[in-house]
Length: 145
Image 1 (tube, rainbow, N blue to C red):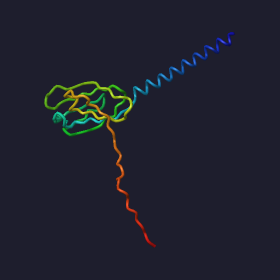
Image 2 (cartoon, rainbow, N blue to C red; image 1 turned 135 degrees about the horizontal axis):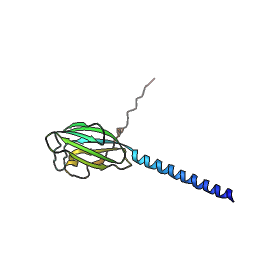
Image 3 (cartoon, rainbow, N blue to C red; image 1 turned 30 degrees about the horizontal axis):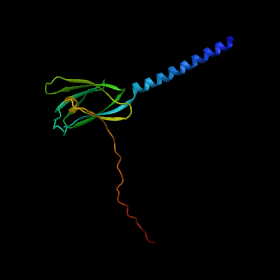
Image 4 (cartoon, rainbow, N blue to C red; image 1 turned 60 degrees about the vertical axis):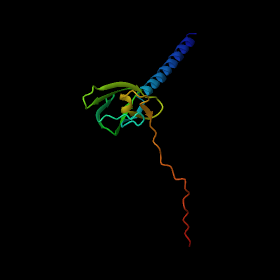
């Protein structure tokens, strides 16, 4: 009877440890999921909004990057929630906000112009496209011997 109690406790401890390890793995995956974030400082065509001339952008604790109008650069970020700080060169007060990235896609593009003007969505999934082969059939080369 004592052996059954010891075996039952041992089994419960093993199951508990397995659950703890799985939970820890899921939490670490979600907290450290990496994304590539393209920050875009270009004009927006819809409402004809103009991008700022010169800004300094900091995402999370990454190195600040200077952007002129029309520039695009990338940040590698980890986790789901991020902080962005935009400092303007024209004397306007700096803009700071938090944003979240979904778990699935790997690459996103963030429009600074849309963000500072309150236009949603200012973050979109960025797809890289491979070059497709032309639809024209290739000419066959015939060598006569």
